[in-house]
Amino acid sequence: MADGKESADRKGRLRALLAWGGTVALLAYLGFTTDFAAAWAAFRNADLALVIATIGVATFVTYLIDVVTVRMLLRRLGIRVGFKEFLRVKGASYLLNIVNYNLALVLMAAMIKKRNDRGWGAAGSPFVLLNFVDLSVFGTLVLAAIAAGQSPFEGVITIGVGLFAAGAVAGPPILCGIARLHHLPGFLGRVFGHDLLEAFRHLSFGAIPIVMAQRSVLILAYAVMQWAFLHAFSTDIPILQLLVFMPILSLIAFIPVSVSGLGSTQVVMREFFGPYVPAAIATTVAARASVIDAYSTASILGMMLLRIGIGLVCLPWVSRELTEARAREEIP
Image (tube, rainbow, N blue to C red):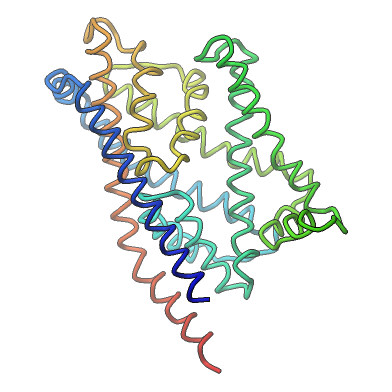
């Protein structure tokens, strides 16, 4: 058991090292390719009141939507968690989310395990399902954009993105079906009979589109948030076009190559949003990239700092609860 814990700790440290190393490398690239004078001018000329208001409103609105929709999913799976309790857990998870999204899910799984007397596999299963549902929502939006002729890519890349999106959409129903199969031979039986897929066995096929629709509200909220941030930097992009870009940016943020998408999403934002910067404030590709760098840095760092504050407020309660639960488990 100790060896397993040490191995998990090593893997955790390696993931954190890769995330921070990737962040430093990507930010170094941005630093070498950014016109800092133009970026600073874009920041000074931005509607800073709108930036600050968007950071505050968007952070708390998306926080609440996330908590409400995850609790809806948990209830469908027969798991009852109080609103205030999960609000605190989700808030504390923001600190782990800075390093990696999946580490935040581990913290939420720990609270499910504590409250519902489940093993680690069963406790983490709803959040594995949540990942697949979110990916399915992203995939649906991407396929809709391609069907409407609004893909930001061309040719073979669009085909590849479309195939990946189709796989993401098909993921939840396929896994829900396979997880229900009995008497699978050998290795397949152990994999698909594992507790980690328990949530897939309990979620009905009819509930999948309902859960996806609920989670899509969070994506729409993020799209409105990005529209407001961009508007503050004199860059207007239609909401429908943002709904094309957001799933791709969200998928990039999921990849644990940087901390909270710093660097990785910013590089892609240059390509997606740069063409919408008006010629009145930027006439060259480099100048437009600098405006987008100013917007992305202000929005990402602003929300990160506020979420760190939320996490620090919630962490003492969550830490105390987990410590008490561990103490109860150790009492013979």
